[in-house]
Image 1: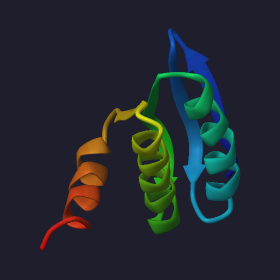
Image 2 (image 1 turned 135 degrees about the horizontal axis):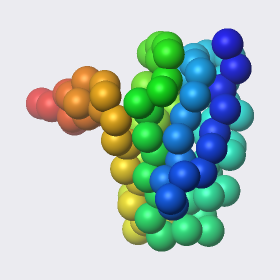
Image 3 (image 1 turned 90 degrees about the vertical axis):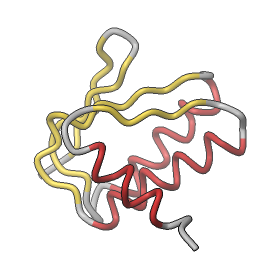
Length: 92
């Protein structure tokens, strides 16, 4: 399933799957947005499937935003699992 990105009220709503087949284009698309906007919010509420590559793509975008002193936020059902995975990558 493809990944559609819609902008709603200043936040980006993801629809579909964030997987190995869509992760690279997702990173490229949002890398540009992060470099042009100070605050980027991505809502994953309507993502049907996210695999390890999708989680890594989100981690990559968080790192890009941190390097450029911008905000990249992930909201929606399931974001706590992504947060826990991201946080555990910095543990001991």
